[in-house]
Image (cartoon, rainbow, N blue to C red; front, side, top):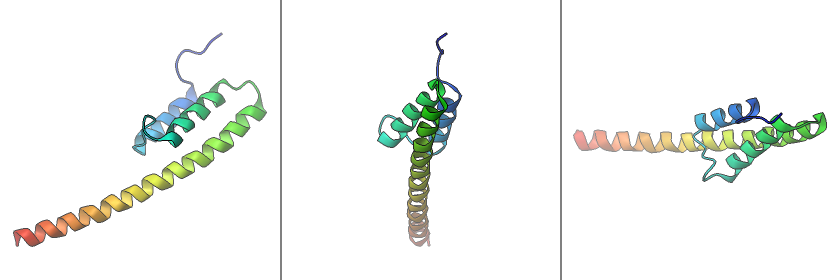
Length: 90
């Protein structure tokens, strides 16, 4: 019997990628994470699922770190813009 739509792991990965603001259209690691999640959902053997899960975990760690770094950069820029606006107003 075939699966209709994404499985549980793929849905969870897509939700996390949305929260991290990672696009599968423009980020190869994000696209690969979704592909690995789909493999896990359809894996028939534990060994194949475990291998894909290990790779998926590493990819998600990388994506989380990149998202955290991007957030830090945005915070610095926002602080600079706020200071500039304050100087311009006062």
